[in-house]
Image 1 (tube, one colour):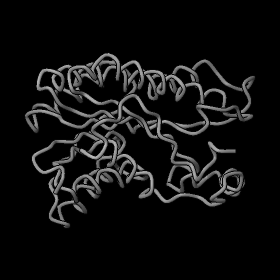
Image 2 (image 1 turned 45 degrees about the vertical axis):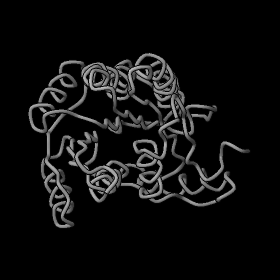
Image 3 (image 1 turned 90 degrees about the horizontal axis):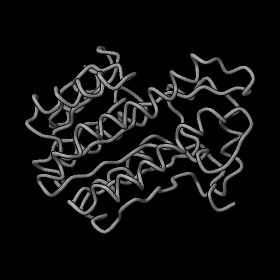
Image 4 (image 1 turned 120 degrees about the vertical axis):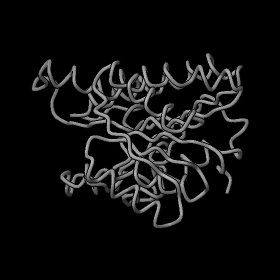
Length: 246
């Protein structure tokens, strides 16, 4: 029970990768604060964790601005007393040609993918630093490190997350807060299912030549959040079936 006594806030944990992360952390003893927009799916995730003798609570949040991030941080602290592990998983992805991107599309994606994790980390990391320990794990993407047609907007938001990961490691690391990121490749989730054959074609470009399951990404997050990564700081860990190698 590596995370016994620890509190983990996982954003966007109603489904997909976030749910897998929440379930894995709870199975290892963490009190998991499940967060997302859909209360019904949040309740289902909490029920599944509790059915496995884990500890979890649901905190609804629509992370689209600084105020919503600060409010989630406040409620998380109020509910559990403190937060030891923050997983910035909530995000949105939309793909298409640059000329077709509207200003609303642009602003919405940057608000959810960059602004919300920025201000959530700003609200929670200082308390971790005061206690001398904590972990922040950001969820990025493999397309933050190379260009693909139609992914300029999404990839650029996650490239910002990669830089924030390194900057926060430099800022909070000296006080014992480790900040790292995971960069997944193609993963089959409720959010990526509409991509259809496109997801498989993307996966075929990597040595593993297959689509990942959310649990495979969750294991990497658990590693970075845990004691086994005690000397790992500011890393963006590719979990992409080897796509970073080709």
